[in-house]
Image (cartoon, rainbow, N blue to C red; front, top):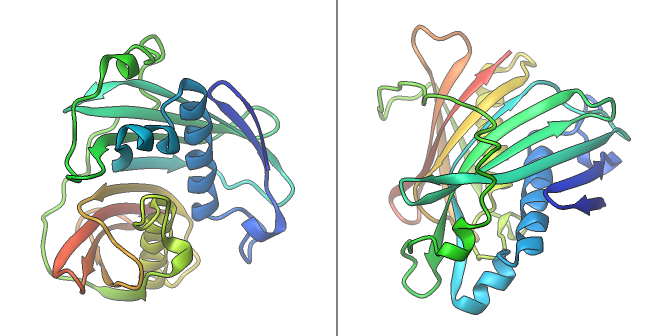
Length: 248
């Protein structure tokens, strides 16, 4: 349940949002951000369902989040979002999440492409959307992608099949399910109760219902508790996403 004002949504962390530690998990935080973004886009007339009338839709190309702390059960959190501009033809969307005392618990930045639903190819961002940017607010995070030697090597393999609940309104795997997949992959490789500190996801291709994903984890040399993840789609014979996670 959320209450909304322009660019801001307020959520109560429910029992079903929490894991064994009594705190909201990464999927819940991504769902909070996704819901806030949708509420904001809807207020601007550019949400997924409204853009579908123009035969267009939004898809994430990249999503980077730093988690300072995880909210506990029954805690109230406020999530703020805005569009900060365009980079490489994609819209930048920013997020800041705060606890009930106003302290920051998460910052995130993302890139979204506007896609033609028929051709599945990106289109130029129209002027009426560019006029909605909060040019004065900047990025929520300034970050440089972690340098990784892309390799097929791995320290651990986590395999899953996409469920119906993983599939979103665009009929492909939801970004929150991607985040959960990479969390499971990293957590399974560590086996020591570490906490996810940051996640950087790069989306490479669609994942549909009932497809098998082989998600590998490789410890990055010279980086304490950093992992490189590669999600290989067995049905399509290609990499559908890669990610870098950091743990504490």
